[in-house]
Image 1: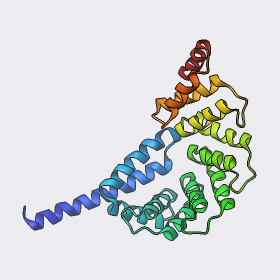
Image 2 (image 1 turned 180 degrees about the horizontal axis):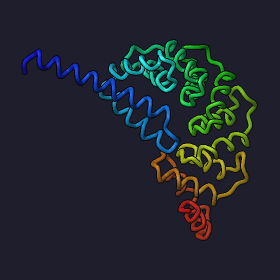
Image 3 (image 1 turned 90 degrees about the horizontal axis):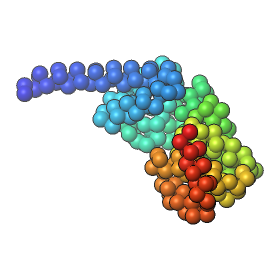
Image 4 (image 1 turned 45 degrees about the vertical axis):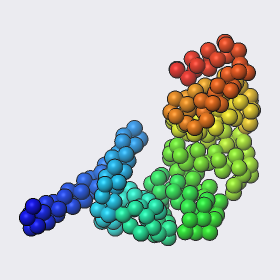
Length: 238
């Protein structure tokens, strides 16, 4: 193909990618909860094929104050995709988006503090940002709050509080929270021991492919009556 024609076609592809990335960012920032995951999945597919171009599109919108773009550009700096990995830059962008109320940025900012990425490890700051995102309804943040209270990281250890947060995430369908809730009911940790509830949560997590959930369910079933298993399975279907 003539090199001049190829350069024109390549230029069109670049502009189309930038336009699509910008459009997806705007849609994601306005999407309702039910549509947001599809939007995020489509954006991630675009990142996988053209990370540098997507980073460029994110930067343009981020500089205009778009919180979703700030969050996504921060994520790219966090993992080094389309831009050099830079925890400090990721933190700066996450903070800008988090202060605008972006729940994804809030939970990632909490993660950075919890793990000491780009900042000294600070569980109190991690809890602060996890809680903000959890109260906005983000399931991963609710799961992280469960872990914070279960382990006593930056807060007094409180299994009851941990189960409250795990339940919120589990009821949104987060498989790892469902599995943890199953373990809690089986052992009676933070909740009354209840094999029927444990089996139900294991079953729900196993249906999503959560590691060890099916094994935990089947081991638990050996301790249960057929009537209890039947009830648990019915609860999982309802």
